[in-house]
Length: 265
Image (cartoon, rainbow, N blue to C red; front, side, top):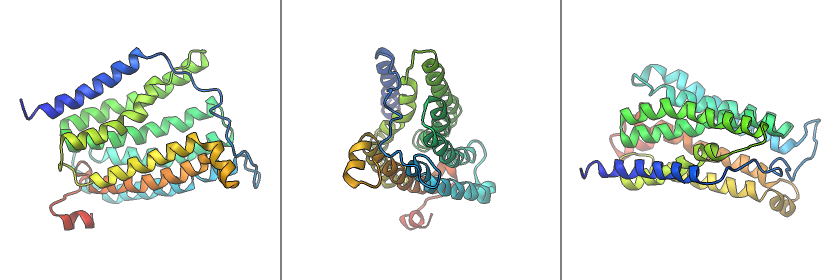
């Protein structure tokens, strides 16, 4: 029973999070969401810096996909190879989806920004489930989380189009993994070799979200880059540490025996 207590606490956290969102009122898309501070047109590209600041994400996704192809034969059987493949596909395609959205910001283009992002969130979440809760939980989590992530975006989009916007499922998909990560690290201390990198991912992600919410204030302060542009650059730094997590993850085929091995992985 004592060995199962951390599992019980974690799944209780997930259940209460779902119940809490379910009991709250629907959250429609804020009408001012697309009103970005920096709307300059440079070289014929509208919202220039919000568009081109996705370039680092493009190269990170490309690097990850290349690494997955090179290591494909080394992955354990099952979903172990598919998790990093889907994650890096999400990063790579988000660079295009985000650029497309920021070129002409509205709900229709935002759909193509959010859909590939769910591949990133859910794949990284699946890695944590796999490494902390075991292969079975990771596999089930991966097979359930991916379609749920996609459905959360489609639910928001079609409900928004019908005049009853509701971001609650998408908010859960985006933010619960950020709550789950420290919870798993506290409940299962020492079980995964990449704790500091997960913390760095969370730290850069939080900074990116702060910049996103202070879009206009940051632009007024710098006079050059807006908070949203900084969000993209800071998010890309966080993705570099996501790469480290994948490289060190036993779920993705890493074999970590010693501290020296960890540093070389």
